Figure 1 (cartoon, one colour):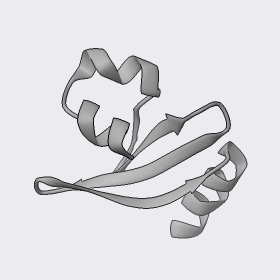
Figure 2 (cartoon, helix red, strand yellow):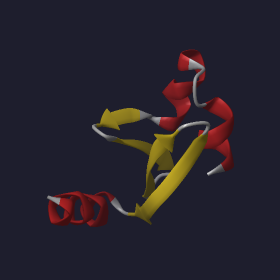
Figure 3 (spheres, helix red, strand yellow):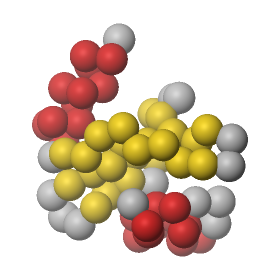
Length: 64
């Protein structure tokens, strides 16, 4: 979470995190197996979920 927070807004740093948009959320890698789901809320980043690729897919599917 700290790496995502510290690199947010610096596009050249995003490459290592695998940061990508899943509107209105964002996703980034947390090591090889885990991914973080978060969104920007004003000046803050709100983290919603941490899980594997498959767990993130289920989390996003169940949000609809």
